[in-house]
Length: 153
Image (cartoon, rainbow, N blue to C red):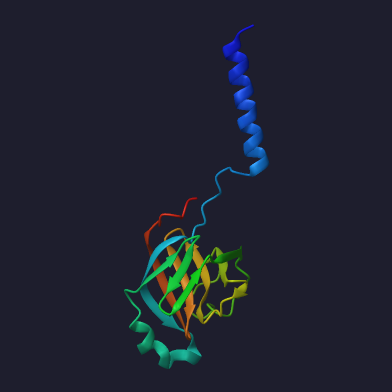
């Protein structure tokens, strides 16, 4: 009997069993994780006067990782992200975004409480490099600047 074959077979079986029991396989990366920058702002019709204040946010950074969600006054440690397909006619972005161009909606919860959408608690994924965020009566367009260190694990 070949001792090397038996040992390597048992070792591989043990590794497979451990991975199966502990769920230690790599998770799929979340597409919104990373560092983002506000590149454009828009307002819905009833919030048109808020545009000046929102324009001051162009160039600001937002950070979304598994350990932290942060933008301006909103900061959450250990955020929970709830991803769902975009509902038809989402009222928050209906006035500024073409129907069907957004892939999914991502709600951010902090310590079990869902953050208010108008304070950065709702993200809308357009594509791998573009997010929209509701913020104080407007819509912020964010472009990806970095994958962020915890984006893929």
